[in-house]
Image 1 (cartoon, rainbow, N blue to C red):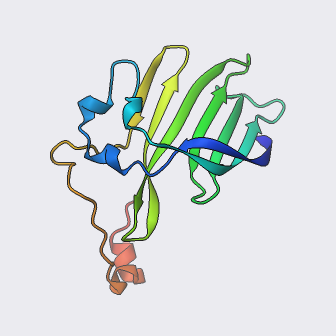
Image 2: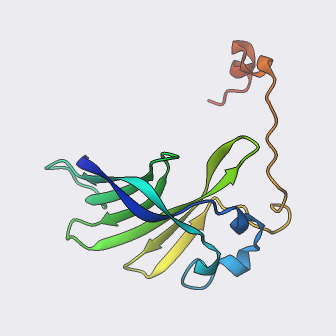
Length: 155
């Protein structure tokens, strides 16, 4: 893909910690992810426009990504087919973990325009056993020894 980019401001999903303590049926409605639970913030973003190289073929001929300047995460992603029709709109939900400190990507909501449906993936919501708060602990240094890494490799 080829493309260009520029800086802008946009409303993107950000600091959505509350989503992950809400149960899945409350969030997942029949035709849409419940907007009452998504927090949107005005952020500086890099708008990256990508298009296929001439002669190449793909279902998605053109895409625009809105990357949060602070986290480098894609907040929103719009995709068009070769006929110029908007086919997908995606937004990525993140959560803030001050104990790390970090903001971590948590879930993607993808709307497909032709079929008028959506999918939500990677979310851990307030349902047992996924309703436990995330805990991050330091990893032991020997976990990164070559022997330990080789022992845990999957081929």
